[in-house]
Image 1: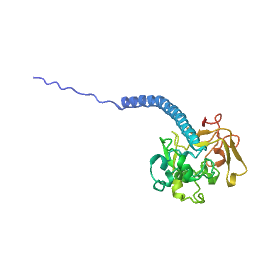
Image 2: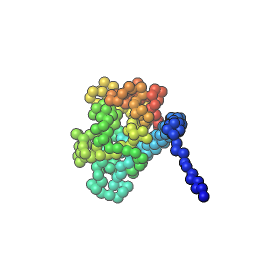
Image 3: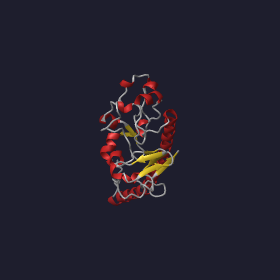
Length: 244
């Protein structure tokens, strides 16, 4: 009686190399398409988020007749929650400053504030921005204003930790949105030679590269204002602007 035993032939090194090469070629063809689609989806997401920020800011302006920093849009008041004002953490209260640093009366704004006006999809704290991207914040000449940790409004019990704990909205690329309302934004100290006067409300995303316009690198506070004062531009680079 003869026993037949089947034998399996193993792949040779050449065959394995050929298969690996084909997989690598397919990956090289598909990955750029995937990255492009991901970038496109994030650009659309940024436009949608900026539209939501604009709607929230318009509601704020209808309620208190002033624009405020973006990080204030998700804050609440004792009028809408029923909480005593003293029980609301300072970083979550109705704002004490307008978008460009003019002082507000906290108790008066609290009575008119109907926030939160929005919930952020992605956010960080002002403290993290101040630490990791110091060129963006007001004391270094940048456009992002937050409640002054050194000189809070008269009678305010706010302090540095509270102001820096406030949450700030980020775009889908992980960069802070930049907002300018109608009116003058005075540049502090080193950048005082220029004053930006915004003709309309506008929110900016720095786009996929995270840089303003054609700026070659990070770090120059003056670049983060719209042209001709700075380098934020819809025509140069990949910045995105939403006007309202």
